[in-house]
Image: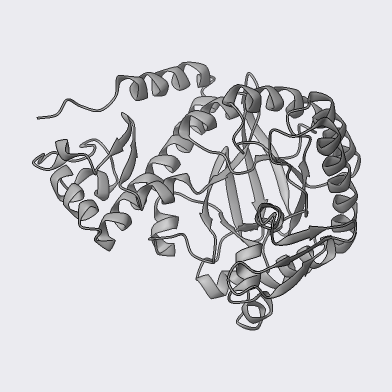
Length: 376
């Protein structure tokens, strides 16, 4: 296993990239989708299952873990990998996105953010240094800088102020992180929907010579066209030899279009959250198992899937579980969804290596557009 963090490009097809991140705890095949394990668990899954669907890395949420059970407690119990029984790479976010979303409960300054817990109202402080300290206590492999994510739409001066603050915080996070050869700290490009701000942010972060770069502040309610335009502007400004991570994205369609623009890593709660709300992602698009059309349907979600949840259970049974709010319904649909997302990433990686990404992406999109099989 690798002793240091490294990234190598294996193949490119247009702007789409097939790569490999190597770290002491394992390799991450890119483009990669990271299941979100907010509070140290990927909801409705156990870790062997998460590994079994093909995940190389999961995401942990610094904000939630610092509040409960507490970063110091996790450290005493052996770190997040031991605590959650996941011995492979973990990426932790900085906690910034959640703290910034607590607009009525937080105060922002150059030093950092003071806020009150959404759980019990207890006061907390989060500075760039404290964010890196917490992520170190969790012992995550890829750690994110603390940043200020601007809600869109926003005024240009507000976008610029938040972007400049995030750059100063990136410098402080880099200093706090220091030299950890087996781990990485990523900077986060901000700049809202301003092309000029995005370019300035990306260029300044590039000059810091970080091990990886994220694009933040997108998929926060803006139209998809705006997100894609910002990626087209931002990615060419980032070093080709470092991984690029689009935070909080997204739908399968978002992933295909973002890979086509040079993104290597993704995370999103969508497949797990959808699974808890009766929604299944399939090669035929998204299927709502709450719908009455499935009540008497003996057919599986997808007879060609290698996932038992999609292949072996009838739509009628899944419909019954969802309508009855049985825990097993959420478990099976989450399993299906994460399996589908990882199969999508596997298809993308193979297509890039075969120099056939554009054709494969069109084929996948056509399958979604055709929709589900007719009702009985």
